[in-house]
Image (cartoon, rainbow, N blue to C red; front, side, top):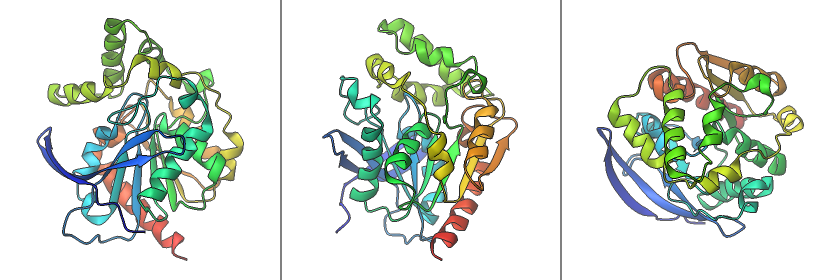
Length: 299
């Protein structure tokens, strides 16, 4: 297969100059998702491994700005995409498009296959922990080089959920004013230190692209991932902000305890977005882990 050409897109976001190939992937159930390949035009990657980023609830690929605008994009092939219902992807209203694990599994598999991402390292943040676990439950980890779970959801018991989870429920309110305020509250809870206004408005913009009805369809579906977690055999890094009021550090401890050989990296001063608040540390740690996973996958 020949890699899809895509459309070269350039933009300036929060002071960063961005360039990527905009691509469209069609899921098995007909949902079209917007994907972005951040390979630097005209430059060869220094590392053979690719990194696939999955964003969280009501977010978009824009959450990975501090990664795609960094030197990671010259060392690795970076790919992002907007989950169904988010960003520039299709937003079907019917609940079944979001409630069935097989649809999420098919979406991740379609992105990997259609964009020809060979043995990627998958970075799953927040709600995307559930998405990648849906994928692993259907397809296993044979097509992956490794896994990075970032403040990622893997269960829904009260002991692993923090008080800021109330904002996610209020974001599903059909009243626009209520859901908009809840979105602002959630963004403030995502960080331990206040965001600069430009960054806050940037995040608010892509969060508000997700309809309240889509958000409602995401909430409350069953979380029975214990067996899936125990089946993972690829190298796994569990990253978590210690000050996260959404998914408590107990979530990371549980995830790591269930995945054989998983390692935990705790960010003591960060909340739900350590990849944003401590981007330099996160990027360096991700690069090192990607090289380790690549070496193991090549054996």
